[in-house]
Length: 432
Ligand SMILES: Cc1cc2nc3c(=O)[nH]c(=O)nc-3n(C[C@H](O)[C@H](O)[C@H](O)COP(=O)(O)OP(=O)(O)OC[C@H]3O[C@@H](n4cnc5c(N)ncnc54)[C@H](O)[C@@H]3O)c2cc1C
Image (cartoon, rainbow, N blue to C red; front, side):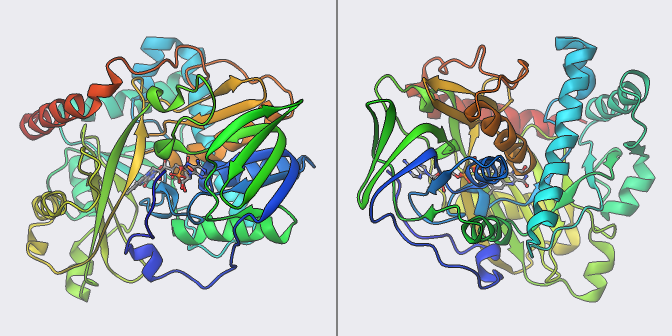
Protein backbone atom coordinates (compact mmCIF):
# COMPACT_ATOMS: atom_id res chain seq x y z
CA UNK A 1 0.00 0.00 0.00
CA UNK A 2 0.98 3.65 -0.21
CA UNK A 3 3.72 4.98 1.99
CA UNK A 4 5.22 8.36 2.75
CA UNK A 5 4.80 11.29 5.11
CA UNK A 6 2.48 14.24 4.83
CA UNK A 7 3.07 16.77 2.03
CA UNK A 8 4.40 20.23 2.89
CA UNK A 9 0.98 21.77 2.57
CA UNK A 10 -0.20 25.13 3.82
CA UNK A 11 -2.61 23.23 6.04
CA UNK A 12 0.17 21.34 7.79
CA UNK A 13 2.25 24.52 8.10
CA UNK A 14 -0.62 26.32 9.86
CA UNK A 15 -2.13 23.35 11.73
CA UNK A 16 -3.17 23.74 15.34
CA UNK A 17 -1.57 21.37 17.81
CA UNK A 18 -3.97 18.56 18.57
CA UNK A 19 -4.48 15.02 19.79
CA UNK A 20 -2.08 12.19 19.04
CA UNK A 21 -3.22 8.87 17.61
CA UNK A 22 -1.61 5.46 18.13
CA UNK A 23 -1.22 2.37 15.97
CA UNK A 24 -3.30 -0.75 16.46
CA UNK A 25 -1.53 -3.07 18.84
CA UNK A 26 -3.20 -6.42 19.50
CA UNK A 27 -6.59 -7.84 18.63
CA UNK A 28 -9.93 -6.06 18.92
CA UNK A 29 -13.59 -6.65 18.26
CA UNK A 30 -16.16 -4.00 17.29
CA UNK A 31 -19.54 -3.90 15.57
CA UNK A 32 -18.30 -1.76 12.70
CA UNK A 33 -14.77 -1.25 11.43
CA UNK A 34 -14.05 1.80 9.29
CA UNK A 35 -11.05 1.59 6.97
CA UNK A 36 -9.68 5.08 6.13
CA UNK A 37 -9.22 8.15 8.33
CA UNK A 38 -10.39 10.90 5.98
CA UNK A 39 -13.70 12.80 5.80
CA UNK A 40 -15.68 9.73 4.68
CA UNK A 41 -14.39 7.39 7.38
CA UNK A 42 -14.58 9.93 10.19
CA UNK A 43 -18.05 11.16 9.16
CA UNK A 44 -19.24 7.56 9.19
CA UNK A 45 -17.75 7.08 12.66
CA UNK A 46 -19.51 10.23 13.87
CA UNK A 47 -22.86 8.99 12.57
CA UNK A 48 -22.36 5.47 13.92
CA UNK A 49 -21.35 6.65 17.37
CA UNK A 50 -24.39 8.98 17.32
CA UNK A 51 -26.52 5.86 16.75
CA UNK A 52 -24.79 4.07 19.62
CA UNK A 53 -23.03 1.59 17.31
CA UNK A 54 -19.65 0.44 18.58
CA UNK A 55 -17.07 1.31 15.91
CA UNK A 56 -13.35 1.93 15.33
CA UNK A 57 -11.38 3.75 12.62
CA UNK A 58 -8.22 2.21 11.18
CA UNK A 59 -6.02 4.48 9.03
CA UNK A 60 -3.03 3.19 7.08
CA UNK A 61 -0.95 6.36 7.38
CA UNK A 62 -2.09 9.26 9.54
CA UNK A 63 -5.35 11.12 10.10
CA UNK A 64 -5.84 13.48 7.15
CA UNK A 65 -2.93 11.96 5.22
CA UNK A 66 -5.17 11.39 2.17
CA UNK A 67 -7.08 13.95 0.12
CA UNK A 68 -8.98 15.20 3.19
CA UNK A 69 -5.92 16.81 4.76
CA UNK A 70 -4.76 18.30 1.44
CA UNK A 71 -7.98 19.54 -0.15
CA UNK A 72 -8.83 23.16 -0.96
CA UNK A 73 -11.46 22.90 1.77
CA UNK A 74 -14.42 24.25 -0.25
CA UNK A 75 -17.83 22.84 0.70
CA UNK A 76 -19.82 23.47 -2.47
CA UNK A 77 -23.61 23.02 -2.58
CA UNK A 78 -23.69 21.88 -6.22
CA UNK A 79 -22.39 19.09 -8.40
CA UNK A 80 -19.99 19.47 -11.27
CA UNK A 81 -22.94 18.99 -13.63
CA UNK A 82 -25.65 21.68 -13.78
CA UNK A 83 -28.99 21.02 -12.06
CA UNK A 84 -30.81 21.90 -15.28
CA UNK A 85 -28.78 19.25 -17.14
CA UNK A 86 -29.41 16.72 -14.36
CA UNK A 87 -33.14 17.49 -14.62
CA UNK A 88 -33.04 16.88 -18.38
CA UNK A 89 -31.18 13.59 -17.94
CA UNK A 90 -32.90 12.19 -14.83
CA UNK A 91 -36.14 14.18 -14.51
CA UNK A 92 -37.12 16.99 -12.13
CA UNK A 93 -37.79 14.74 -9.15
CA UNK A 94 -34.34 13.14 -9.17
CA UNK A 95 -32.67 16.51 -9.75
CA UNK A 96 -34.62 18.01 -6.82
CA UNK A 97 -33.40 15.11 -4.66
CA UNK A 98 -29.81 15.74 -5.74
CA UNK A 99 -30.13 19.44 -4.98
CA UNK A 100 -31.54 18.68 -1.51
CA UNK A 101 -28.65 16.29 -0.87
CA UNK A 102 -26.03 18.83 -1.99
CA UNK A 103 -27.41 21.33 0.53
CA UNK A 104 -27.76 18.62 3.22
CA UNK A 105 -24.10 17.77 2.62
CA UNK A 106 -22.90 21.31 3.47
CA UNK A 107 -25.38 21.48 6.38
CA UNK A 108 -23.96 18.25 7.79
CA UNK A 109 -20.40 19.66 7.79
CA UNK A 110 -21.73 22.75 9.58
CA UNK A 111 -23.50 20.58 12.15
CA UNK A 112 -20.36 18.50 12.79
CA UNK A 113 -18.17 21.59 13.26
CA UNK A 114 -20.72 23.08 15.66
CA UNK A 115 -21.59 19.90 17.57
CA UNK A 116 -17.93 19.03 18.24
CA UNK A 117 -16.69 22.64 18.46
CA UNK A 118 -13.97 21.95 15.88
CA UNK A 119 -11.57 24.89 15.57
CA UNK A 120 -10.95 24.78 11.80
CA UNK A 121 -11.57 28.31 10.48
CA UNK A 122 -15.02 27.25 9.26
CA UNK A 123 -16.82 30.03 7.37
CA UNK A 124 -20.17 29.79 5.67
CA UNK A 125 -20.36 33.00 3.67
CA UNK A 126 -21.04 31.53 0.22
CA UNK A 127 -19.30 30.09 -2.82
CA UNK A 128 -18.86 31.53 -6.31
CA UNK A 129 -18.97 29.56 -9.57
CA UNK A 130 -17.77 31.88 -12.35
CA UNK A 131 -18.40 30.96 -16.00
CA UNK A 132 -15.37 30.58 -18.27
CA UNK A 133 -17.49 30.76 -21.45
CA UNK A 134 -20.82 32.05 -22.71
CA UNK A 135 -22.13 28.47 -22.89
CA UNK A 136 -21.16 27.88 -19.26
CA UNK A 137 -22.85 31.15 -18.29
CA UNK A 138 -26.08 30.05 -19.98
CA UNK A 139 -25.86 26.76 -18.03
CA UNK A 140 -25.54 28.59 -14.71
CA UNK A 141 -28.44 30.90 -15.59
CA UNK A 142 -30.51 27.81 -16.48
CA UNK A 143 -29.69 26.46 -13.00
CA UNK A 144 -30.98 29.58 -11.27
CA UNK A 145 -34.12 29.41 -13.42
CA UNK A 146 -34.59 25.69 -12.72
CA UNK A 147 -34.08 26.14 -8.97
CA UNK A 148 -36.66 28.93 -8.88
CA UNK A 149 -39.19 27.33 -11.22
CA UNK A 150 -38.88 23.64 -10.34
CA UNK A 151 -37.32 23.42 -6.89
CA UNK A 152 -38.87 26.47 -5.19
CA UNK A 153 -35.43 27.72 -4.16
CA UNK A 154 -34.51 31.37 -4.54
CA UNK A 155 -31.23 31.37 -2.61
CA UNK A 156 -28.70 31.09 -5.43
CA UNK A 157 -28.43 34.01 -7.86
CA UNK A 158 -26.47 35.16 -10.90
CA UNK A 159 -23.90 37.93 -10.93
CA UNK A 160 -23.56 39.96 -14.14
CA UNK A 161 -20.19 40.15 -15.89
CA UNK A 162 -19.52 43.52 -14.24
CA UNK A 163 -20.57 42.42 -10.76
CA UNK A 164 -18.51 39.21 -11.05
CA UNK A 165 -15.45 41.14 -12.24
CA UNK A 166 -15.74 43.41 -9.22
CA UNK A 167 -16.21 40.52 -6.77
CA UNK A 168 -13.41 38.42 -8.29
CA UNK A 169 -10.96 41.17 -9.26
CA UNK A 170 -10.51 39.64 -12.72
CA UNK A 171 -12.06 40.18 -16.14
CA UNK A 172 -11.63 36.60 -17.36
CA UNK A 173 -15.11 35.37 -16.46
CA UNK A 174 -18.46 36.03 -18.16
CA UNK A 175 -20.52 36.20 -14.98
CA UNK A 176 -20.96 34.01 -11.92
CA UNK A 177 -23.37 31.90 -9.87
CA UNK A 178 -23.43 32.80 -6.19
CA UNK A 179 -24.74 30.36 -3.60
CA UNK A 180 -24.61 31.84 -0.08
CA UNK A 181 -24.84 28.30 1.36
CA UNK A 182 -21.25 27.47 0.34
CA UNK A 183 -18.58 27.16 3.02
CA UNK A 184 -14.85 26.68 3.50
CA UNK A 185 -12.59 25.36 6.25
CA UNK A 186 -9.01 24.43 7.16
CA UNK A 187 -9.29 20.77 6.12
CA UNK A 188 -6.37 19.35 8.08
CA UNK A 189 -7.59 20.95 11.31
CA UNK A 190 -11.13 19.78 10.54
CA UNK A 191 -10.05 16.18 9.89
CA UNK A 192 -7.82 15.95 12.94
CA UNK A 193 -10.28 17.86 15.11
CA UNK A 194 -13.05 15.44 14.14
CA UNK A 195 -10.83 12.42 14.83
CA UNK A 196 -9.79 13.86 18.20
CA UNK A 197 -13.42 14.55 19.15
CA UNK A 198 -14.39 10.98 18.23
CA UNK A 199 -11.48 9.56 20.19
CA UNK A 200 -12.46 11.69 23.21
CA UNK A 201 -15.98 10.22 22.94
CA UNK A 202 -14.67 6.67 23.06
CA UNK A 203 -14.28 5.81 19.37
CA UNK A 204 -10.84 4.20 18.90
CA UNK A 205 -8.87 5.84 16.07
CA UNK A 206 -5.75 3.93 14.98
CA UNK A 207 -3.08 5.30 12.65
CA UNK A 208 -0.12 3.69 10.85
CA UNK A 209 -2.28 0.56 10.66
CA UNK A 210 -2.93 -0.35 7.02
CA UNK A 211 -5.52 -3.06 6.56
CA UNK A 212 -3.72 -5.62 4.43
CA UNK A 213 -6.57 -8.06 3.91
CA UNK A 214 -10.15 -8.76 4.92
CA UNK A 215 -11.46 -12.28 5.30
CA UNK A 216 -14.48 -13.96 6.79
CA UNK A 217 -14.07 -15.38 10.25
CA UNK A 218 -17.22 -17.12 11.41
CA UNK A 219 -20.03 -14.58 11.31
CA UNK A 220 -17.61 -11.66 11.25
CA UNK A 221 -14.98 -10.02 9.07
CA UNK A 222 -11.37 -10.16 10.18
CA UNK A 223 -9.13 -7.23 9.21
CA UNK A 224 -5.42 -7.91 9.28
CA UNK A 225 -2.98 -5.05 10.00
CA UNK A 226 0.76 -5.26 10.83
CA UNK A 227 0.11 -4.56 14.52
CA UNK A 228 -2.99 -6.66 15.10
CA UNK A 229 -6.46 -7.63 13.91
CA UNK A 230 -9.98 -6.28 14.19
CA UNK A 231 -13.04 -8.55 14.07
CA UNK A 232 -16.20 -6.75 13.02
CA UNK A 233 -19.73 -7.52 11.93
CA UNK A 234 -19.61 -4.73 9.32
CA UNK A 235 -16.76 -3.06 7.48
CA UNK A 236 -16.87 0.36 5.81
CA UNK A 237 -14.31 1.01 3.07
CA UNK A 238 -13.57 4.76 3.11
CA UNK A 239 -10.35 4.70 1.11
CA UNK A 240 -11.44 6.74 -1.97
CA UNK A 241 -8.55 7.31 -4.44
CA UNK A 242 -6.23 5.14 -2.32
CA UNK A 243 -8.44 2.05 -2.61
CA UNK A 244 -6.70 -1.31 -3.15
CA UNK A 245 -8.36 -4.74 -3.31
CA UNK A 246 -8.76 -6.13 0.21
CA UNK A 247 -11.07 -9.11 -0.12
CA UNK A 248 -11.57 -11.86 -2.70
CA UNK A 249 -13.33 -10.60 -5.85
CA UNK A 250 -12.97 -6.96 -4.73
CA UNK A 251 -13.09 -4.73 -7.83
CA UNK A 252 -13.83 -1.42 -6.06
CA UNK A 253 -10.52 0.13 -7.09
CA UNK A 254 -11.37 -0.48 -10.76
CA UNK A 255 -14.64 1.49 -10.50
CA UNK A 256 -12.79 4.80 -10.05
CA UNK A 257 -9.84 6.52 -11.70
CA UNK A 258 -7.38 8.15 -9.25
CA UNK A 259 -6.37 11.61 -10.49
CA UNK A 260 -4.04 14.13 -8.86
CA UNK A 261 -5.23 17.60 -7.85
CA UNK A 262 -2.57 20.20 -7.04
CA UNK A 263 -2.45 23.48 -5.14
CA UNK A 264 -0.06 26.41 -4.82
CA UNK A 265 -0.15 29.17 -2.20
CA UNK A 266 1.50 32.55 -2.84
CA UNK A 267 3.34 34.69 -0.33
CA UNK A 268 0.92 36.88 1.68
CA UNK A 269 -0.52 39.58 -0.60
CA UNK A 270 0.27 43.18 0.33
CA UNK A 271 -2.64 45.51 1.09
CA UNK A 272 -2.85 46.85 -2.48
CA UNK A 273 -2.75 43.34 -3.99
CA UNK A 274 -5.31 42.22 -1.44
CA UNK A 275 -7.73 45.00 -2.47
CA UNK A 276 -7.64 44.01 -6.15
CA UNK A 277 -7.39 40.20 -5.83
CA UNK A 278 -10.64 38.38 -5.11
CA UNK A 279 -12.01 41.39 -3.15
CA UNK A 280 -15.21 39.53 -2.17
CA UNK A 281 -13.11 36.99 -0.24
CA UNK A 282 -15.34 34.04 -1.18
CA UNK A 283 -14.06 30.63 -2.25
CA UNK A 284 -14.26 30.16 -6.03
CA UNK A 285 -14.53 27.08 -8.26
CA UNK A 286 -14.90 27.91 -11.96
CA UNK A 287 -16.75 26.02 -14.70
CA UNK A 288 -13.75 24.81 -16.72
CA UNK A 289 -13.59 21.09 -17.45
CA UNK A 290 -10.18 21.22 -15.75
CA UNK A 291 -11.38 23.50 -12.98
CA UNK A 292 -9.45 26.29 -11.32
CA UNK A 293 -10.33 26.88 -7.66
CA UNK A 294 -9.01 29.67 -5.47
CA UNK A 295 -9.51 31.56 -2.22
CA UNK A 296 -7.75 34.03 0.04
CA UNK A 297 -6.33 32.30 3.09
CA UNK A 298 -6.51 33.77 6.62
CA UNK A 299 -2.74 34.45 6.28
CA UNK A 300 -3.47 36.75 3.30
CA UNK A 301 -1.98 34.24 0.82
CA UNK A 302 -3.81 33.30 -2.36
CA UNK A 303 -4.50 29.57 -2.67
CA UNK A 304 -4.83 28.47 -6.30
CA UNK A 305 -5.60 24.87 -7.29
CA UNK A 306 -6.31 22.78 -10.34
CA UNK A 307 -5.85 19.43 -12.00
CA UNK A 308 -2.54 17.77 -11.16
CA UNK A 309 -0.36 15.29 -12.94
CA UNK A 310 -2.29 12.37 -14.37
CA UNK A 311 0.54 9.89 -14.14
CA UNK A 312 0.19 9.82 -10.36
CA UNK A 313 3.38 11.84 -9.73
CA UNK A 314 2.25 14.31 -7.16
CA UNK A 315 5.36 16.48 -7.13
CA UNK A 316 5.91 17.15 -10.84
CA UNK A 317 7.29 20.74 -11.16
CA UNK A 318 5.59 21.07 -14.59
CA UNK A 319 2.18 20.75 -12.93
CA UNK A 320 2.93 23.54 -10.49
CA UNK A 321 4.27 25.72 -13.36
CA UNK A 322 0.96 25.17 -15.18
CA UNK A 323 -0.89 26.32 -12.07
CA UNK A 324 1.33 29.42 -11.84
CA UNK A 325 0.53 30.22 -15.49
CA UNK A 326 -3.20 29.81 -14.83
CA UNK A 327 -2.93 32.05 -11.75
CA UNK A 328 -1.17 34.72 -13.84
CA UNK A 329 -3.87 34.50 -16.54
CA UNK A 330 -6.52 35.03 -13.86
CA UNK A 331 -4.61 37.71 -11.94
CA UNK A 332 -1.99 39.30 -14.30
CA UNK A 333 -0.80 41.64 -11.51
CA UNK A 334 0.41 38.54 -9.61
CA UNK A 335 2.51 37.16 -12.48
CA UNK A 336 5.79 35.83 -11.07
CA UNK A 337 4.69 36.18 -7.44
CA UNK A 338 6.63 34.03 -4.97
CA UNK A 339 4.99 30.67 -4.36
CA UNK A 340 5.50 29.56 -0.79
CA UNK A 341 3.74 26.20 -0.70
CA UNK A 342 3.06 23.52 -3.30
CA UNK A 343 1.29 20.24 -2.66
CA UNK A 344 -0.98 17.66 -4.27
CA UNK A 345 -3.18 14.69 -3.49
CA UNK A 346 -5.34 12.14 -5.20
CA UNK A 347 -9.06 12.38 -5.95
CA UNK A 348 -11.17 9.49 -7.26
CA UNK A 349 -13.08 10.23 -10.47
CA UNK A 350 -16.07 8.20 -11.69
CA UNK A 351 -17.43 7.86 -15.22
CA UNK A 352 -20.68 9.67 -14.32
CA UNK A 353 -19.03 12.30 -12.05
CA UNK A 354 -21.12 11.15 -9.05
CA UNK A 355 -19.79 9.58 -5.86
CA UNK A 356 -21.34 6.20 -5.08
CA UNK A 357 -22.35 4.49 -1.86
CA UNK A 358 -23.29 0.85 -1.62
CA UNK A 359 -22.56 -2.72 -0.55
CA UNK A 360 -19.58 -4.70 -1.83
CA UNK A 361 -20.22 -7.95 0.02
CA UNK A 362 -22.35 -9.11 2.91
CA UNK A 363 -21.61 -6.55 5.65
CA UNK A 364 -19.01 -4.66 3.60
CA UNK A 365 -19.98 -1.15 2.49
CA UNK A 366 -18.21 1.62 0.59
CA UNK A 367 -18.51 5.25 -0.50
CA UNK A 368 -16.07 6.87 -2.90
CA UNK A 369 -15.64 8.75 -6.18
CA UNK A 370 -16.24 12.38 -5.22
CA UNK A 371 -13.99 13.96 -7.86
CA UNK A 372 -13.32 17.48 -6.58
CA UNK A 373 -16.53 17.62 -4.53
CA UNK A 374 -15.73 15.47 -1.50
CA UNK A 375 -15.54 18.01 1.32
CA UNK A 376 -19.30 18.20 1.76
CA UNK A 377 -20.49 15.06 -0.05
CA UNK A 378 -18.29 12.77 2.05
CA UNK A 379 -20.14 14.00 5.13
CA UNK A 380 -23.45 13.09 3.49
CA UNK A 381 -22.02 9.71 2.52
CA UNK A 382 -21.03 9.13 6.14
CA UNK A 383 -24.75 9.41 7.00
CA UNK A 384 -25.71 6.99 4.25
CA UNK A 385 -23.00 4.50 5.24
CA UNK A 386 -24.11 4.58 8.88
CA UNK A 387 -27.68 3.88 7.74
CA UNK A 388 -26.49 0.88 5.69
CA UNK A 389 -24.46 -0.48 8.63
CA UNK A 390 -27.57 -0.09 10.82
CA UNK A 391 -29.46 -2.31 8.36
CA UNK A 392 -31.55 0.47 6.80
CA UNK A 393 -32.11 0.82 3.08
CA UNK A 394 -31.17 4.08 1.42
CA UNK A 395 -33.12 5.72 -1.38
CA UNK A 396 -31.82 4.65 -4.81
CA UNK A 397 -30.55 7.38 -7.13
CA UNK A 398 -27.53 8.48 -9.16
CA UNK A 399 -25.32 8.23 -6.05
CA UNK A 400 -26.36 4.64 -5.25
CA UNK A 401 -24.64 1.45 -6.36
CA UNK A 402 -26.67 0.57 -9.45
CA UNK A 403 -24.63 1.01 -12.62
CA UNK A 404 -21.45 1.67 -10.64
CA UNK A 405 -19.38 -0.83 -12.56
CA UNK A 406 -15.64 -1.18 -13.20
CA UNK A 407 -14.28 1.44 -15.61
CA UNK A 408 -13.74 -0.22 -19.02
CA UNK A 409 -10.06 -0.58 -19.99
CA UNK A 410 -9.07 0.43 -16.43
CA UNK A 411 -5.51 -0.77 -17.05
CA UNK A 412 -5.26 1.93 -19.76
CA UNK A 413 -6.66 4.67 -17.54
CA UNK A 414 -3.51 6.81 -17.56
CA UNK A 415 -3.28 6.88 -21.34
CA UNK A 416 -7.01 7.62 -21.49
CA UNK A 417 -6.74 10.39 -18.88
CA UNK A 418 -3.76 11.91 -20.67
CA UNK A 419 -5.70 12.13 -23.92
CA UNK A 420 -8.80 13.50 -22.17
CA UNK A 421 -6.75 16.07 -20.22
CA UNK A 422 -5.15 17.45 -23.39
CA UNK A 423 -8.56 17.51 -25.08
CA UNK A 424 -10.16 19.33 -22.13
CA UNK A 425 -7.25 21.79 -21.93
CA UNK A 426 -7.75 22.73 -25.59
CA UNK A 427 -11.54 23.02 -25.23
CA UNK A 428 -11.23 25.15 -22.06
CA UNK A 429 -8.72 27.40 -23.82
CA UNK A 430 -10.72 28.04 -26.97
CA UNK A 431 -14.22 28.26 -25.52
CA UNK A 432 -15.37 31.85 -25.27
C1 LIG B 1 -5.51 18.90 -3.77
C2 LIG B 1 -6.97 18.58 -3.57
C3 LIG B 1 -7.90 19.60 -3.52
C4 LIG B 1 -9.25 19.31 -3.33
N1 LIG B 1 -10.14 20.35 -3.18
C5 LIG B 1 -11.45 20.07 -2.88
C6 LIG B 1 -12.35 21.12 -2.54
O1 LIG B 1 -11.98 22.28 -2.42
N2 LIG B 1 -13.65 20.80 -2.31
C7 LIG B 1 -14.10 19.51 -2.35
O2 LIG B 1 -15.29 19.28 -2.13
N3 LIG B 1 -13.25 18.48 -2.61
C8 LIG B 1 -11.95 18.73 -2.85
N4 LIG B 1 -11.06 17.70 -3.07
C9 LIG B 1 -11.58 16.32 -2.97
C10 LIG B 1 -11.76 15.90 -1.50
O3 LIG B 1 -10.63 16.31 -0.76
C11 LIG B 1 -11.91 14.38 -1.41
O4 LIG B 1 -13.02 14.00 -2.20
C12 LIG B 1 -12.17 13.91 0.01
O5 LIG B 1 -11.16 14.39 0.88
C13 LIG B 1 -12.23 12.39 0.06
O6 LIG B 1 -12.26 12.00 1.41
P1 LIG B 1 -12.12 10.47 1.78
O7 LIG B 1 -12.16 10.38 3.24
O8 LIG B 1 -13.11 9.68 1.02
O9 LIG B 1 -10.69 10.05 1.20
P2 LIG B 1 -9.22 10.40 1.74
O10 LIG B 1 -9.18 11.67 2.49
O11 LIG B 1 -8.30 10.28 0.57
O12 LIG B 1 -8.93 9.26 2.80
C14 LIG B 1 -8.73 7.92 2.46
C15 LIG B 1 -7.80 7.35 3.51
O13 LIG B 1 -7.81 5.93 3.41
C16 LIG B 1 -6.55 5.48 3.84
N5 LIG B 1 -6.38 4.10 3.38
C17 LIG B 1 -6.33 3.65 2.11
N6 LIG B 1 -6.19 2.30 2.10
C18 LIG B 1 -6.16 1.90 3.39
C19 LIG B 1 -6.03 0.63 4.03
N7 LIG B 1 -5.92 -0.49 3.32
N8 LIG B 1 -6.02 0.59 5.38
C20 LIG B 1 -6.15 1.70 6.13
N9 LIG B 1 -6.28 2.93 5.57
C21 LIG B 1 -6.28 3.04 4.22
C22 LIG B 1 -5.58 6.47 3.22
O14 LIG B 1 -4.33 6.46 3.89
C23 LIG B 1 -6.35 7.78 3.35
O15 LIG B 1 -5.94 8.53 4.48
C24 LIG B 1 -9.70 17.96 -3.24
C25 LIG B 1 -8.75 16.93 -3.29
C26 LIG B 1 -7.39 17.23 -3.44
C27 LIG B 1 -6.40 16.10 -3.47
